[in-house]
Length: 368
Image 1: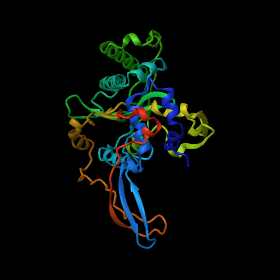
Image 2 (image 1 turned 30 degrees about the vertical axis):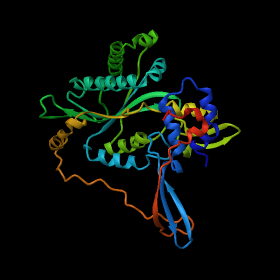
Image 3 (image 1 turned 135 degrees about the horizontal axis):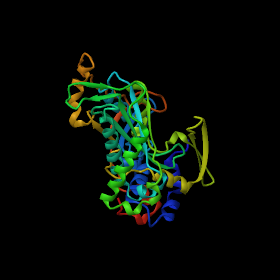
Image 4 (image 1 turned 45 degrees about the vertical axis):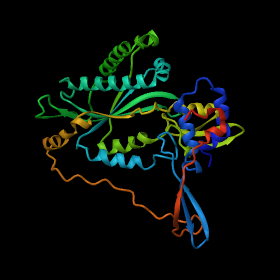
């Protein structure tokens, strides 16, 4: 199976040479971590199989959130935490998408624009929900930023999972919504556009946005998605999934990468082939700024207000039960890849200092 690390080993130096002046430090870090992941440079353990009389080595993962080999178990833990907050109401998926004219600005100023994107979209939805024509109360929501479309092109959008209802302004009643309706999409989009415009002006970025974007209608999507459990299970993989996973890379031949994607209109799997350097570029476009939080909580689902959940459940007539302990991954013995028997632990392998990325371009030494 071809992996992203294989592509970086064979064509990473070509990509670095092509984008020498513009490559971001965060992109260099991700490339280095992916190349290091589960290799000698990460360190690990030495094991011995008494039956085969052979030594085996287990190397550590890099832990980078953009690495296709890491993050596999975190989605399950996240899902269990969210399920403890579920309410017996209809949930809604509300999606905000940045217009195409703003994508260049967003990519050039990612941390600022992504933060403004979260702040203004969440505010727009909360403001509209307070209107008595809609919810008439304070809602809670979980927002997840995603920067790619099905073909892995740059397409920033935020999905919010919203319980169908809210707390009254005095905090004494639960305001239940219709199971098929949360808020109107058109006024929501207008409110979002107005808030985003003002936010760009305040940050000094308004002059970088094309004027045409303010003349067009913006689009938001609000859909009922059934129980909260179903909605969370749908979004959980997106919380920790990287833009292009190894299982969707089909081949690397003659400097060209073929990968598969599921077409949104038909839900049919299709393929696309790109020059290796362009493929690497498309992957790195979705690397988030260092320290950026891509999952955020608002209203009564925010960390500070989550203490309101037991009260809301009482208002909904739910008998409170003890909080379930989160499942922990049981430790398994390291088994011999040849005979399958448990092996004896010999010792730790030290981490090596030189990231494999230096092998692609020695003059990068000191970047890490």
